[in-house]
Image 1: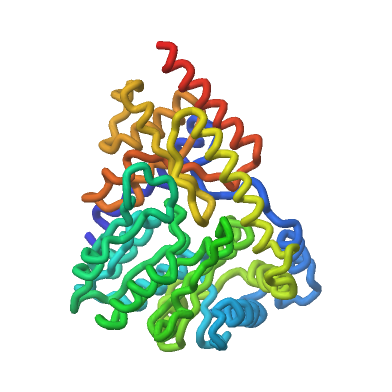
Image 2: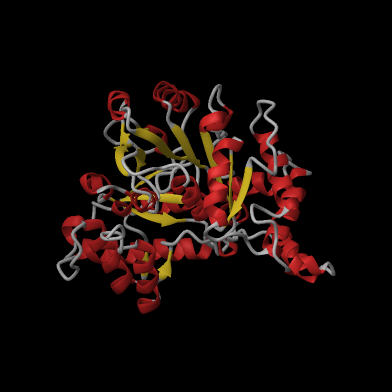
Length: 417
């Protein structure tokens, strides 16, 4: 019974839709561009290594070379003289999904409340429910009419204050946010942190898009703020960091007393991650550590290259009358599609939410797949997401241009009717 109501999954549904109709896929967040050769070469070299142990079980909580690389990287990036212990304060998992699962299952008990900021990645809610917790939702909302930047979507301070109580165990923060692309400012994070300290609440900070921040912005890691290391578990992803989502390798880092529970969940579930992939990610991190902050660093290059894709796609869609929300980070673009709403006949689609109706119709009849953002909202707040569709722009330039051309043809036809 604990799984009842959790059967629906947007990715299962839309992967099947893509297989059935073969649309241009700007829905799923997998890159078909910007996959770095040096990372692929690291995996090739690891597989061809003469050391037979490259093909045997690794340490359950993370291959030593990898946890040492993760420790070195984040000890630098935290920027507060925090030295992370690789053996007790880092856990390597089966993707960021696995890290989130261990963090939630390791700390949420029946009756606990977990605050989830909307929009949220869709796995947060079912994981909390499986752990026996109660998700409590609070949405980011646009701060004014005509909002065009993710920066302008904010939490209501009064609502945020009111949602914390004696039953609150944790808050899940996605920074940069998927699908909105919001990068939380230091002052916004401090407001959340003050409430966490006041109510003795954990923060699970999902930072998988941490290296993709635009327009001279910077990511503030919540665990680096005063008093927050001891109550923060931070989640990372090799798939998002190096554009290799199929490798399914992630990690959690934080204080030993919190990571310990994550390790216990992990050892009784997945137990350990494939050794060659861990070795390859370790080698890739070592290369990046040697050029951290330099122009040739992949962490620097990817934001610059994706910014150009973001801007080109947004400009193309704006030219057709759509209204994109320009993201500060990540590689998704929320686009207001309601300029077409009264011109389309979507009665053939049976879904309740209008963004679902539109994106399925678009896949089936126009050969373009995007994602309905209402899936990233709770039942009571789905109306916030219905106005938008989500484009993934870590795609080849020609694919992005083809998407604009598909929509140009659609809008032209509708305007001539």
